[in-house]
Amino acid sequence: MMHPIDYSIIVLYLLLLLFFGFIYRLKKEDNVSDLILGGRALTLPAFIASLVSTWYGGILGVGEYTYLYGISNWLVFGLPYYLAALLFAIFLAKKARQSKLLTIPERLAQTYDNKTALAGSVIIFLMTVPAAYILMLGVLCEQFFNIPFSIGVILGTIFSIIYLFMGGFKAVVRTDLFQFILMFIGFIILLSYVSINYGGFEFLRQNIPNQHFSWHGGNSGWYIAVWYVIALATLIEPAFFQRCYAAKNEKTARNGIFISIICWMFFDFLTTATGLYAKAILPNLTDPVASFPALAMEVLPVGLLGLFALALLSTIMSTVDSYSFLAASTFGNDIIPKLFKNSSDKIIFYTRVGLVFSTILAVMFALFFRSAIDIWHAFGSIGTPALLIPLFFSFVGRKRMSPKAAFSSIVFAGSLSFVWYCSKYFIESGEYFLQIQPIFPGLIISLLIFILSRKNRNLQL
Image 1: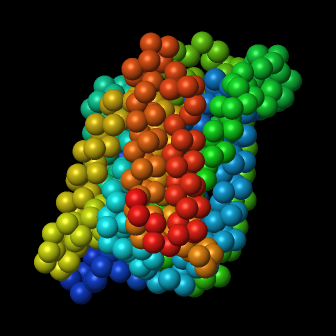
Image 2: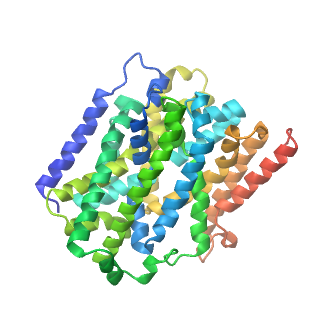
Image 3: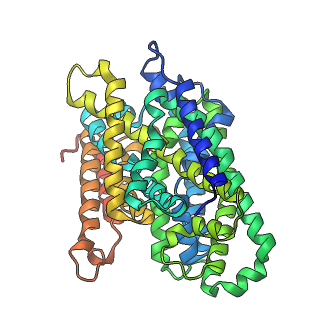
């Protein structure tokens, strides 16, 4: 159990979050742009802090993977995402800011039609439901506070989103700035402490299986390759688009991503090294997803333990609030107005309804999957093939898909990947149909539709 001093540090942090929500609460005269994008006034430091902290919420999943497979974590959760983020910065950041839109579905509607935008909205809503991160909050509550997992999931979620009701995107950004600092401080503290007290690389080499220092970590090359395809989801990542839409100007959007990549590289070094120490010091953990909190509980003294717990909480909560808000704004701004007439004047209200709805879904998914990596794999394998080609080519290139082709691509590619994903539950071996990862059939269908539509703009599907 933690010391009262550690608990007091965490309580102070939670009170500060509520304070930020109150200070940056929406005013009566604020419009939808203020709610969703904070008035498009995001400066470079705020852009970097918000994007870095939001996109790294899967901290316990990183710890889980490093504990199980070693430095191959960097090849799975590091390198492919740096490359994808670089592509986004080069090809999409400037154009996204120039478009002056509020959301991704608005781009789909602008380029194709409302039917395509609605189909894309459903995919984006499901992809931004923060189930993996809410699961991690449950694990943290279980580890640090000895609270049952299911109750921890609910309590952690409430504290992560309550200030969103008051402040919208401005509250998200202000809390992200605070959480950005905490996440780096916490891991620097833990890594420094274990390296000083246990030893450096020689200690790791003597206490970790050699396989943990291999590029594959015991996984097949195909398994690792799949993550490079899943990383392409960055090109349809709502958090990236939202920050670019909200940026002060085009230069802020593009340079902000470049600098963010450097920040992620440094943080990946901290987390991967810390995960290796967890394996060396606690070699027999029954729940690898808890490797970071378990290591901290094992080695850190009073006070420092509270600060590290704060680092984990802030890293995860910064993502929970951002993705919850993205799901909510998609629900309120893009789904409801297209389903029901005369609802456009109640977008702020429906966004708050969407916040509650997406939170309930996230809790349900978290309790069902019980693995952050499984959640990322499932939603990435279905959402990426559905949206990648229609959305990417709505910004890049002159010849675009016809509206019918874009709609067909989203529906058919997403449906095929979903059915393929579910096939493992009906095959005795637990393998996917034909032992092919579900992301590939969906991408192939989407690519075929794109090629055919380029040849025939009136493609009927």
